[in-house]
Length: 453
Image (cartoon, rainbow, N blue to C red; front, side, top):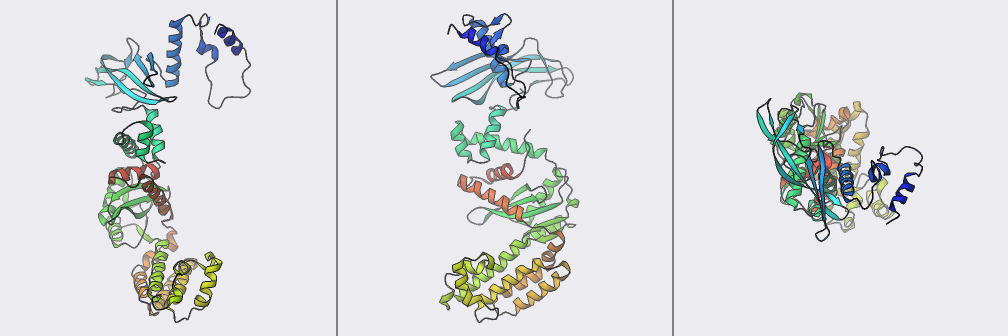
């Protein structure tokens, strides 16, 4: 220990590393560990204490008039307590009107949980002044720069929790940081609500609508997604036309213009279609092409299931009939070759399979040929004597305008389905959410592209 000053002097004479630092200019070893009269001696505890306080103030990013007053570490409890105070005679801005030069009227001691100091818990304690403003004639507590008003956590702690909550169950985050999960949910919800308040939806033009199952028993939430910005705009409980009305109100509240929405993409649900037509009458509706192919594929699957009861050679071929030819395995090709080689077959499943392949070719047609091709396909399906495909043909005819709209808008709900995958992963990690409010908060957090300021 006696050689410490000499070691410090040697370290101070070392040449700086070549090139600029990516993190900016750091304080030199001399500026942190030396006083005005040279290196601080270990026999000067007062200066050492002052240097520790200065070092922690720099680490916390404190500026005048705030300063570290005391540092206490309890090894038994594994906790570091840092006491912060303001300079005597300091003035502050009024938290109500922003007027400067307000003097402290009195003060109130508050505490905040901060990021851990290595493996030890760290708490900040500060005397927060209450100022009286002569301009607006109010007396209020100021907001400290390291925490948001009303929070028991510092901003850095909350940012760490938000980052973890995107990829971890909130219950696991709560166990990791040693805080009850209800407090974590309040924290996350508070940040999400604040970020959504300042969100600007004035540029939204094309919206994707889809439902997401939140639990068993046909419990759904409806998500509204900006197809251009690829982010979730609004989440409504249920799957009904009123969900569209709620989205319209939320869009207007965030600076969006319902009349400026030009396109909606959704499935063929009558609730969504009626809601869009009522609350967004100027918007065109495009039916999601992947949903349409899914309807035809489900008809093929239903036909195979029914026919397999009398034709055992169709058993075990469910997924083979749902794949495109280029995606079949060698075994599936061998299984289908004697069955699906020709379009004119006595097997209903084979005829339905060829109808599905023909329907997919609709989206490869030139725009001017699309309507004729779809009408021809509907006629073929209606005459095929397969009940499931006849029902599909009726559905396609009722929604022909929305199907053909794809050739103009070229939009689909692919982005929405990708976001639904993220939502499902969050639900699986958390093994469900105890309330719709928690699920909605998590959807906004992981898919809303929110900016936290």
